[in-house]
Image 1 (cartoon, rainbow, N blue to C red):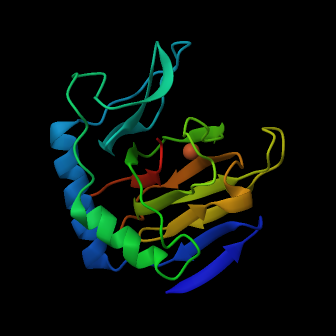
Image 2 (image 1 turned 30 degrees about the vertical axis):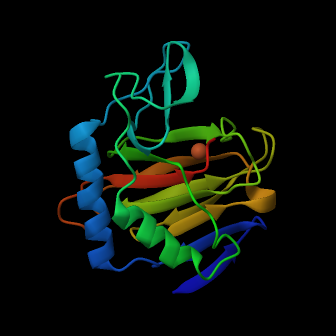
Length: 207
Ligand code: FE2
């Protein structure tokens, strides 16, 4: 495993952290989550549609619809609780974080985004969580993508970090509230035969 503190300071990009069999286990468990809580396109309050499809697992899940952004204990689409975070997710996270300052991190939410060829995510801050001293940690699976990391204002020019399958990105400490997004997916680059496009598993402590 190699650690690359990338610009800007405070964001940690851990490359090639997860081996292929771990990635496959995570993907299979993400598919199991989606059997209970299917991927779908969330909507913004103003009626826009996210180009990535989303689902969640955990005590709470992040969702957006006509009522706005929020964490909910039940899936607003079905009214049933979100699936639990799979054991494989927690084990992979624990193994990765053991060598970092975030070793004690215990997420209660995992948002899973599925990006197909033309999907992207505009620059935004994650600010629906109760405590911003807790990091947001992203595991990437499947196709490579340009992950944008900006400043603390939307207008600050972001840098792009290429994230590939098995990479982990930690936004914590002084980088926790940086604007970030996904500029582009590189179709055809997934090393996982069962996944076209990219899945991101984003772990949060929301409550
Ligand atoms: Fe985010």
